Length: 146
Image (cartoon, rainbow, N blue to C red):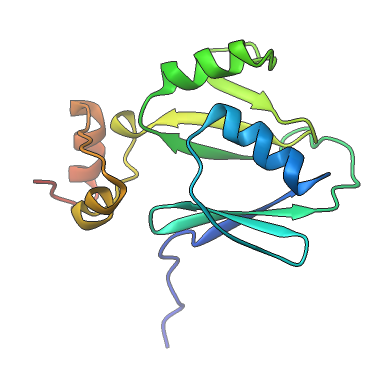
């Protein structure tokens, strides 16, 4: 019997101190599509995936644990972070910590092999392409893009 294969990430649960404050913070940086709220949680859609904001962060900031968000315009995120006075970590990437110490890395859709189906992009109202480097990474894995 073969082992089950990882297919993707449905959601990430991110612990925050306060749901309303978290929605305000992330809403100042990104266009949010709130799926709903329930029991100390808020659910923010990202097409066919979502982030679950869970109230009750108690641990200190993690040193290495992080997650990456894919955006359509990394420079717009940088501008929003600067406008909001959020400290950007030094280095070549675009990394920052939210008010609860969660480390977030921002990557731009066209620069990486991560891809959404045309149907999901259409539903999100997005028309996004890929750089030749990202297309080469996809082709190397046997993924042909139109």
